[in-house]
Amino acid sequence: MKKILINKAPWQTRIALTRDGRTQNVYLSAPSTTHLERSYFKGRITKVLPGIQTAFVDIGQDKAGFLHISEIDRDLAIEKISKITQLDDSPKRPRREKLDIAKIFNEGDDVLVQVSKEPVYQKGAKLTTCFTLPGRFIVLMPNIPRIGVSKKIEDRDERNRLKELVQAKLPEGMGAIIRTSADSTDIKEIHKDINYLLGTWEAIQKGFKSADPAAKVHEDLELTLQIVRDHLDDDVEAVITDDRDNQQQISQFVKKMAPEFVDRIRYYNNPINIFDFYGIQDQIYEALQKKANLKSGGSLIIETTEAMTVVDVNTGKFVGKTNLEDTILKTNLEAAEEVVRQLRLRNIGGLIVIDFIDMATAANRHKLMRHFEKMLKEQDRFQSVVLKVSEFGLVQMTRKRSGKTLQQQLTNDCSTCRGSGHMKSIQTECFEILRNVETSILDQKPGSEIIIYLNPEMFAYITQEHYNPLLALEKMFQGKIIVESTPGLERHIFKIEKN
Image (cartoon, rainbow, N blue to C red; front, side, top):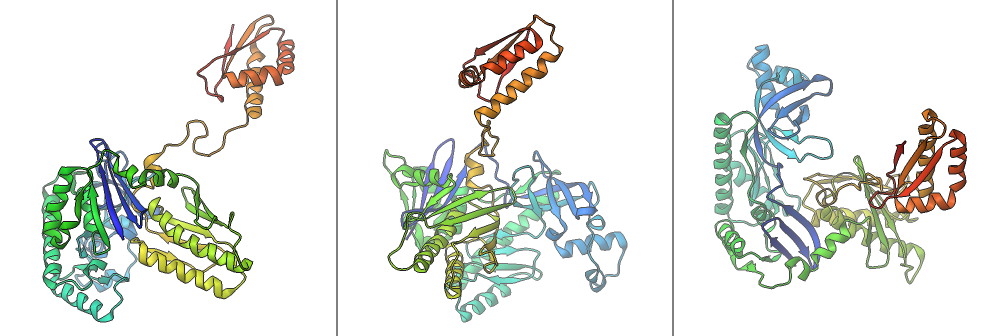
């Protein structure tokens, strides 16, 4: 069974989703942190770049958001082009033409945009005009006339029933994605959800007309209510919060949204922090490490770059009890489940390459892939695409990005190694100092003095291991070199003072 655990403090809100005591997702929010994803803005076009078919849009943030041609609603694009080119009202002619962003937007245009991805690294927020509004049972798509149904709803009759009743209720030109929670739900509840979302969309449109440029028009629910809306279902045993006001807030929300779950909203009354009591804090620390251990004794090595994430599967201490192929298969199957969990827990998206342990039997490779895809389908809410095992034995996949990774939220790059994970050796640092001294003495007069201030560790190393080179440098410029140990300096920092 699953639990939703909420730690509420004045400085931060932390939410963990657990399954059988193991953390599956972690969500963090602070008053000082701005979350943009799913928010709507009255954006103003600041630059149009036809070469990459992208427009940069001012949404009132430090960096302009970017809107690619692929994220522009086609009907909006055709409407804009028609106004400029005065094309015939018939949609056939423009629909056959390749869209050009330079014909859709001009600098200074105002446009309603939604943030589809938070800013990451040096990039601004990714924007879209293909809007979505999440509800409990459906995700409304106000300008995409298509009905989709969650793959987890497998019964064909139920899928058709849901499609028909949603289609009948939506205005023309709108679409929706029917969520797993809608399975076997009464028609009145689904219609209530649709009416709420239609009212929200109408408010967004009115807000856009009256808002100032770059202003926020609409934002999603507060974080705890978002998580309850998106995850509270029959599989959730309890929603436990350590804040009494938060418990009341959630209870009132659930009474309106899903009154059958009100008794599952509970208050945690214990002096031990809720994340410590349930072991969440330790699991978060483990998720910041490169290595993730498997129960069998194997392990995953997970490394993320700006372009992709690489996962390496190792057998480790696990040697099995039968033959090597069975040992490898068991490790790979366990690793497949843990990979899905780690992707969720670390909030890793984009391009992912997994190096499972090579298997000689084709049947075992197929068994692994079926199991991996099943785990993704059953346990991961985000859309993913998985390719077959490559000739090199690698599994390539993509997973939808959503917000920052856990590592980006909780850590900063090391000021010494600058995120590379490596430091120069003390010998390399020493040689760089000697080269700098050599350069510094070129313009020194004979008999002058140079003082080198060093970190204590570097001072000890250079005076013990490379004292003779210092004497050679003194002889070279016929002066004096003084080396001083300076506590507080980092090992890679040194100062040269000329007298």
